[in-house]
Length: 175
Image (tube, rainbow, N blue to C red; front, side):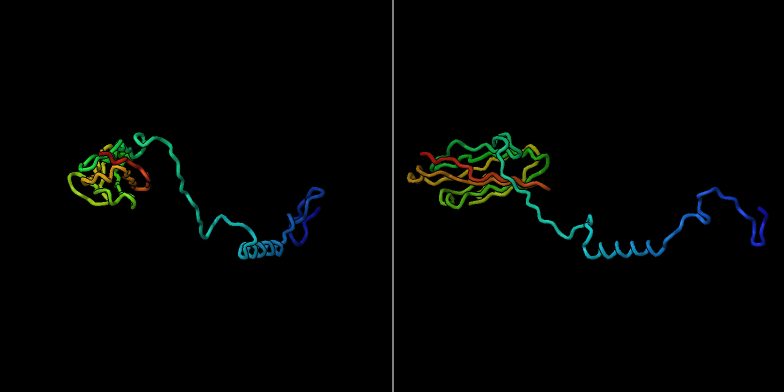
């Protein structure tokens, strides 16, 4: 073929298009608009969320109290007219922990908690370093009618990112 006035003539193989693939810009715009509308109206799921509500509480007796993350050694009994150890609390959290020992409402008439020689009433709050132990005592008055009673108490421990609860621990009151 000879060159034409419009420029050089290019040879092409049979079946190949003259100007490359046909493009449909209108179709691309249509799909783009449809996608924006679908996402904007909630037609397509997204990876985002507005809020979540998840419960993560559990009650499980995994180990016995002396081997737990906050170890409790509860007295086998306490005595009237005496200040006896009620519970030894040892911290195995791996970090400092704030411990709260509280007499249950139905045991508050039995006596007062004592920590480091100080009467703390119905509740004692203290901090334990890693592997430290603290003894919480109970001072019970000289009242023989109390020998039919049982002291019930709770021990809670909290550290950064972790809380443990030991409810309804008990020791009988003996003469």
